Amino acid sequence: DAMVIQNPRYQVTQFGKPVTLSCSQTLNHNVMYWYQQKSSQAPKLLFHYYDKDFNNEADTPDNFQSRRPNTSFCFLDIRSPGLGDAAMYLCATSFGTGSGETQYFGPGTRLLVL
Amino acid sequence: AQKVTQAQTEISVVEKEDVTLDCVYETRDTTYYLFWYKQPPSGELVFLIRRNSFDEQNEISGRYSWNFQKSTSSFNFTITASQVVDSAVYFCALSEANMNRDDKIIFGKGTRLHILP
Image (cartoon, rainbow over all chains, first blue to last red; front, side, top):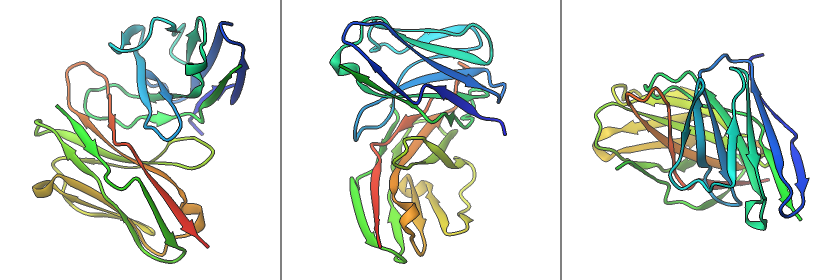
């Protein structure tokens, strides 16, 4: 089945130690999104790629970076995680037509910062 | 500006009861898209439905039904004969047509639904 895969499902890191979260897709979608979701809140969009074009949200901290080496993979890098970065990180994909195509989400990675 | 309001923060019902989750949206566009997602305790956001602004027909899928009313800017979701497995957080979301080739969506704050056995 076509899907969005995130690894790992759980990630523990230390305060200030760089961490990378991974997302891959078999849907061949043009757009890949990264969201941060804290407890009892809605997902918050950090940034997205249309193909190789990177689009950052205005309020995304510089501490968060992303890479998309090819259509299938996208990475979220947190350069110096703080305690406030502990959250669920969700990856999603869509066709990218500007016509409200459905976003399909991966299972998420829960990040714990010690 | 676009906005999605889910006024019900948390709802509890007894199994087999019907329950309706409310969603009210704001947009200035005439072309837009509405969504519902389910987020069970495992955390994955599961797509349930997509509706465009030109299609006001109600939709039924098994025990799930959706009522879209442009006159009141609402897109409500009803679960009939609820089951414990329906316990989750449900998000309503809105996307506006755009020239940026992205499909960005605005989420409501979600409604946490508890189905009690």
